[in-house]
Length: 260
Ligand code: 6GU
Image (cartoon, rainbow, N blue to C red; front, side, top):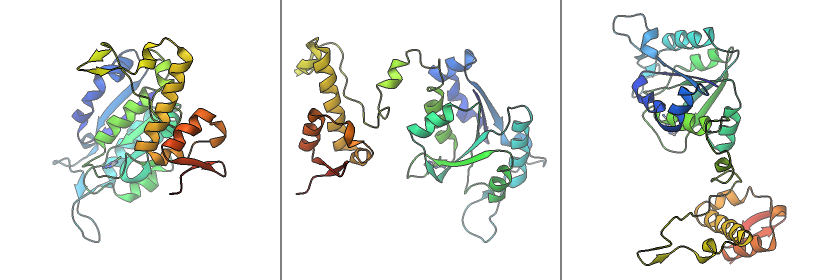
């Protein structure tokens, strides 16, 4: 998979040399290329921003350096890439979107800074890219770089071969729309705290049942919003019991918080 990133702080993306993503790049599973937006300016000061029309605080990124940078990306890539524009005004990034992006040949990230990029660039780019404004969540970062680090890691690890043991992708948080169960390792007794007995039992069916219950318990406690997406038709009696304890009932095929 080919990934291009355009930024005025290319050093921010140096973290993509590390760990799993760094190894995947060395192994050519991921072809990540970082470009400096200032290399596409033509003035002596390498200017990338200017004051906003209509007034207001802050600066806006100028259109032409962005057009030049994005044209250079198109020159040597496959056709019609997805252009992700990180922005707190975008659609919220989630595991479903990560899977969608992981299936693409070519992803391009345009890291904005200041108050954003001249909107005409976004419109112009639609001729050659599938443009996707994407947010990490409801808070504000100073620029897209940190968001791109998060997205490249979330997407990159789903590309076949990047994660050594593909089974670890199946049992993680959000894989099945629920949060992950708690995990423990040796020693079984630590500072007077014991590992749950069931995990030492060797009874694989009991362990699987306990883990599933813990997933429901945790999701109900921490992310009750996720339960609305669960297909209640897939729930067994044990699931319904745990969910009932956690304050959820099935009404018309969907999980809702119990009355009272
Ligand atoms: Cl993707 N970009 C910026 N600048 N701020 C954000 C964000 C993205 N997601 C949440 N806050």
